[in-house]
Image (cartoon, rainbow, N blue to C red; front, side, top):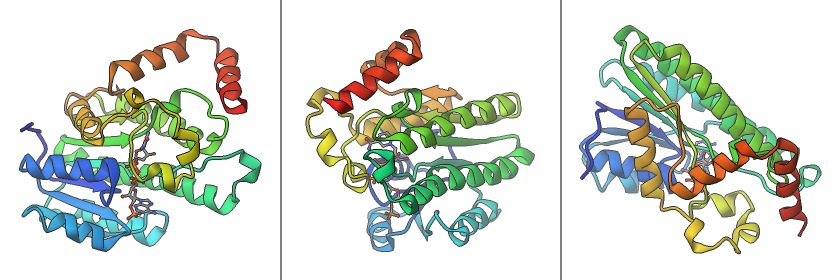
Length: 258
Ligand SMILES: NC(=O)c1ccc[n+]([C@@H]2O[C@H](COP(=O)([O-])OP(=O)(O)OC[C@H]3O[C@@H](n4cnc5c(N)ncnc54)[C@H](OP(=O)(O)O)[C@@H]3O)[C@@H](O)[C@H]2O)c1
C-alpha cells in the first residue's frame, strides 16, 4: 500500500476513470478525499466503500460549481492540502465540424475551472507555506493535435500554465505539477467521440488508470513540474522535442489523413 504525504485531498472528476483512481488510491492510503463531479450517484457509491470520502456535487463548467469548490477549499475546519484538477474532456473530429458550444464547454472545464481552482488553492496554501496542486494535462500537450485541435490546445495551456506557476511557487513550500497521461481506457474515449479513432491503438500503448494516478501523486509529492508516466510515452515526448515542429505537425496530420 503506497503512502502519501497529504493531509486531505480534493479530486475533481472523481466519478470515473483516472479521477476515481486518484480517489481510491488516496482513500485506501488513509488520506481523506473530497470527491467532485456532476454525477452524484456515482460519487455516493464510491464514498460508500470508504469511511474517509466526502461528496461534493458540482458542475465545473458553471460559475456556481466553481464557487462551491472554492468555498470547500477555503473551509478551514477540514483543511485541504492537495488539489487534483483532473476533470476534463475532449472533442474529436475536424475543428470546423465540431459544435462550438461543445468546445466552449471544453475550454471552460479544461482551462477556466483549472485556473480558478489553482488560484484559490494557492491562496489557501500560501499562509501555511505548504500544499500541493496536481493538474492533469495529457501527452497531447506536447504536439498540435489535428482532429483534436481544441483538446490538445487546452492541454498545452495546462502544461504551460502549470510550469509557470510551479516556478513561481518553487521556494514557497507549494508543490505544483502537471501530469501527462498517454492512452488510458476510461469513459474519456466515448465522451470525447474518440472511440473509433482509438480502436486500432495496440494494447501496449494503453496505461492502467491506477498506474497513471499513482505516478501523478508521487510526482506532486516530489514537486516534479512535469510527469509523463511510462518509458514509452517519455520516449515519444523526447521525439516531439528532437524532430522539427513542422515535421511533427505533418506526421500527426498524415496519420489522421490515412
Ligand atoms: N483517458 C485518456 O486517455 C486520457 C489521456 C490523457 C489525459 N487524460 C485526461 O485525464 C483526465 C481524466 O480523464 P478520464 O480519462 O478519467 O475521463 P473520464 O473517465 O471521462 O472522466 C472524466 C471525469 O470528469 C468529470 N467531469 C466531466 N465534466 C465535468 C464537469 N462539467 N464538472 C465536473 N466534473 C466533470 C466526469 O464526471 P461527471 O460526468 O460525473 O461530471 C468524470 O468524473 C482529463 O483531464 C483528461 O483530459 C485522459
